[in-house]
Length: 94
Image (cartoon, rainbow, N blue to C red; front, side, top):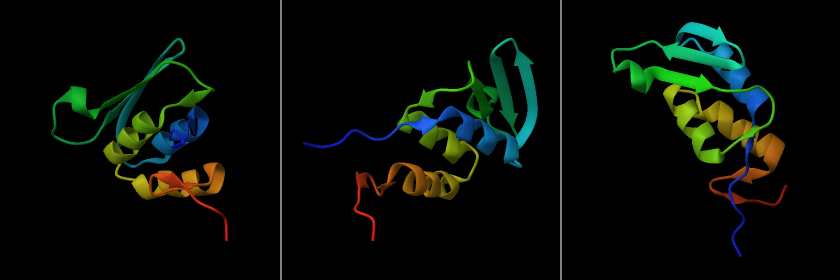
């Protein structure tokens, strides 16, 4: 039986976004935060919206966000360190 991909702490994702030099602007309205990334692609492809803080986000969403921010290595390190997850599957620690 295959294990599903792990989730990612939303607090980590928020810190990854806040630390990125790809962020051009940030707008906070209530519990929602919108980030606009630098670039020339349409704004819809350069926007990240987070609707709440705390909790977990799906693997796929976190990976897509890391790709937009051009820092998938940082997310991979987090998976390995915090979820014992690497290369699409769980691995045994050395």
